[in-house]
Amino acid sequence: MAFRVHTDRLRKGMVIKSDVYTRTGAVLVPNNTPVTKDVVALLARHFIDYVMADYQSTASSPDDIPSPESVPQVRQQQIEEFKENFHIAETTLSNNLIDVVEKEKDLDVPLLLNMLNNIVENSENEVNLCNMLFSMKKNAEGLYTHSINVAIWGQVLAKWLNLEKEEIDLVGTAGLLHDIGLLKLTDKAELPPRFTFHAEMKGGPYGKHSLLGYNLIKDKNIDISVKQAVLTHHERLDGSGFPLKVKNINKISRIIAIADTYDTMIMEEEGIAPRSPFWLLKHLEDNGYHKYDSNMLMTFISHVTNNFIRHNVRLSNGMIGQIVLINKFNLTRPLVQVGNSFIDLAVRKDLGINEIMS
Image 1 (cartoon, rainbow, N blue to C red):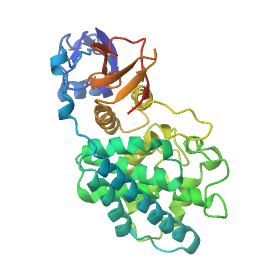
Image 2 (cartoon, rainbow, N blue to C red):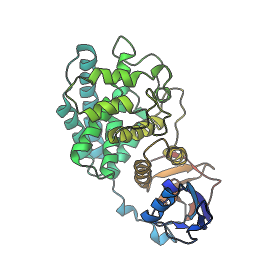
Image 3 (spheres, rainbow, N blue to C red):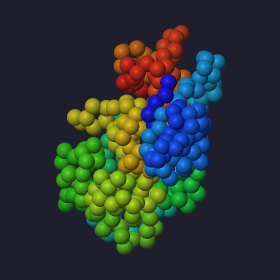
Image 4 (cartoon, rainbow, N blue to C red):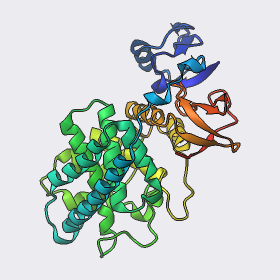
């Protein structure tokens, strides 16, 4: 079955399923052409926004399904050490940010990065790290928890993008500092009453916190790209962000924008119904490619969805099953095993994942 696909989302392994014509009527890309970088570049040069492409399931049979033994497992000791290191990081970050806001002290960036490394290195691999971050979401409210989450998600995305260690450290620093300006919205160096991060994502009365945060650190001994990320982490590539409504933002800020959005939107807050990560990733897949860096977003979605293999889920019809395979051409519609049968959500459009249970 062929689908209408934006050219930004074409990937190797897809096949063009209808002749693509130039504005003069000549065939630019014929039917059944495999998608390559050259094909995508050709379409872009001719300002072709959409084409018909074939999405095929990556699994032809249950034989393709990875065994449980092939999926990294989190040990209980790891979970306890992760929580301990995370709580130490929260205290350390809180003390540092409040010192900056109230006493205009310098940040101890090496100390902050060291505490992040303790969390990441304890996890052994990125699958375990992502799983442990997800498992803590029910108790994840608060500025310092959110800031550490964004720093870690940002660093993980930077690794997936094969960035150098120096840039990964810059991403981590930017994640820790990105919301420091929220502490300037009151005169007590704390979050405003009835504040929610979901509301903060929309700007409004909280929209100036990016500028306030930049002003707090602009004269500190911090890399300029980090300062820019604090200022622009709510800007979007289509100009729809805030507070400056600029489109040209640096690499660090583009990474933090994705990490911040993801962590906020799956956060449980008072009065906010929790969303399934698959709902959010599908939402980003459908609506985010003009707002965020498309390559970064695709990389993030593909890796995060794969980390949910072997997680139990509740489907929209109430059935409980286990994710056994991610369809690389339809990342947010995986193959789910329910009992002895398999439900391909890429085919069953009437069903979705309402909840990830474990």
